[in-house]
Length: 497
Image 1 (tube, helix red, strand yellow):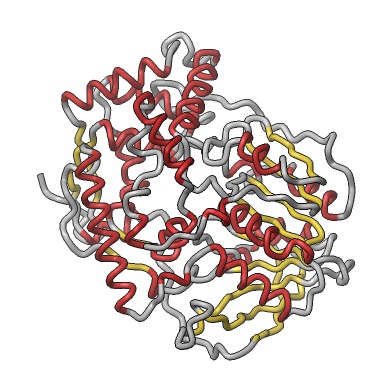
Image 2 (image 1 turned 45 degrees about the vertical axis):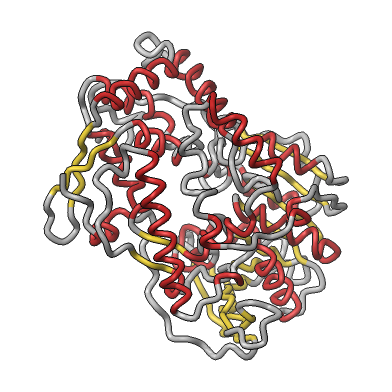
């Protein structure tokens, strides 16, 4: 079977590569004033700029890198604590909102509480930290876990070596270095106090900033919580999520009679793929040739794990399994194409940052103890922890992952169906917070907890204005599953359209 071709990366990576930018002068703070307009016609005065910081503090010869940001100016509360937005990933852009007028409408609402500072964390837009695989990819990458691990290790080793040969110091890409970036930016912008809004990995970064500089924080909003010790996920969390999904599917009037036990259906499909992997076509982006790729139990579990916390994909999971059992590969092909980029590229910023955060010996032992009874054991943290030493030979010490105690007024927000950062993780973190509220958004997955949740923004703004939101609720509509056959306008999913 032909191997996946390297050029396929352009089609399959989940985020388009960022074009290289001219290197700015990095010896000081740089600001440019601009005026931007949202989709609803809201005119926002803004400052766009960067702050030059050392790539690795404590190393005299370290190169300087830019921390890019956009400051949206509040017309009504310019003296309120500025809100620092800490994006997820690690590696997601914070400043991308200025290129999307619809996102600006969302951020404009926050200006009622003060300025908003959208931040690209270190390395987010640095093309030197991206490396594309240039060799053949094993045809059985999505069939065999051992083969997938071996290939992932080759990608990590070659990618890390290539990035280091570009004179990038990967040891500088840690959450603690990003904490220092945030503090330098706060000082440079002459902000005595700030508020934090962290999403996903941004909550991990936010916790670290609160530990180091909590005296400068007026309010913190942590959405989709990844605490200091939560970088690596638990197999039991994936199994719990699958059991919850199975109950929801059984109760759904559209599919419940045919799928009374989603776990049993998954086990049947895994057994089928173990006997005979299913071949799915992927289109070559240049030649437009369709390349056959085999998918076995590992590949199916990997694509399920990747979207197990996304309530936009969960509704089609029963149909995905149903179609495989009945010999239809079309839905599976869509999900494999969505996630095949993991075999085709190395992203140094996110890999090094997660590897440096790593896990305590106790967390690793817990993961290992749960593995024998979990279907998801091989994929729950793939390609970590095996590749972690390649990116960060000396991870951050256990003091970084220690429980956090804080007096900062904090709002925790979790999605009921979020396996990436389940609500109990927020409770683990919250126990050390003396002034906190935790709200769970019913029927929300990871992304739906904030960005696909129109009811969240007014509540968050009220919290930033000092109001008590502890009795408020944000409920999304109950999830409706995609029917097992046919095409339907609602609910539907791109994989079956």
